[in-house]
Length: 391
Image (cartoon, rainbow, N blue to C red):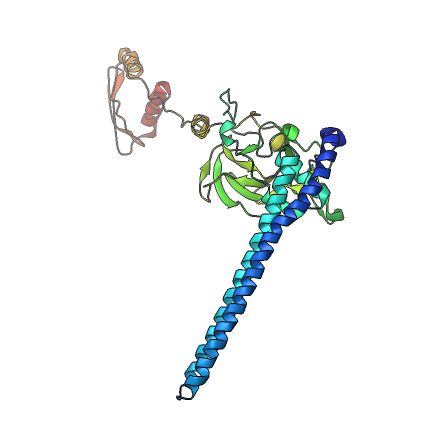
């Protein structure tokens, strides 16, 4: 898998060192913010005391009413009221405490991002790992979706297959190749890993290898990321893993070769980024080595085709039905003129499986009439000879 290791020379070490010292102080000040939410818990505790006092008052009323013969009804009322009040206060306290912790964590993360000078999510994630604050990853703000910044490819197209990850590199690092051992050799790698060049964009678009229909799409497969499969017909299927399928894409949709069908899913293992496209190929239901498919498509485009162009290209690449060329009338006329000097008059009709049924000799020639029926085989040969000359 592709790795991106945090190196000393990649970060301003002196600046971060100073920032971390300042961050320690900020963490302490952030703890003060959390005290505000702990005080909410104390407030709720005081409310509980007041409710208990009200319960005591109601209990005195209940005791008095028991004397009037309503003991059973009032007991049920008291039990239900007590349970409701206690549960309500407990739920409120738990929510207040949870909100307080979340606010404190978000405030701490904001301080870290500010101290790092607003670095990208990848850098912030690495620093959180180094500080042992993995739990704060969930609050890292999502970076702006740059899908609109991808310029569609408009150059020439030479065939119907495309690089699954435009601009990507196929299985160039150890462990990315098909069949590489996994889990201590208990299984093998079922696909080939393709990395976006320079790993500069963890939201790199991937495209359909070839035109086909979506037969499975799962945005939340937790592989990490999602997965989807396309059936291209003729027994060929391709599968794309560690991805975020394009919003709205569903089973049964037709996608065209070179068309964007989603983005890569960013994920880390420790401090190492593992963002890549896992690409699989199946032939007649059997998984095969996808390396040649990924490395040698007909088109190695740098960016996806627009949906409109992808559809247009697909229509242009579809085989056209063979055209039939009828025998030109002038050719038939020429053949008949060629027969006249020999004393033959030929009646030519657009009929099938028909034979000569009448022949009259005269002047060394004959009259050939073509119609349905049966006749002398010797007369059929004349029709065959004429048909061969026409065709």
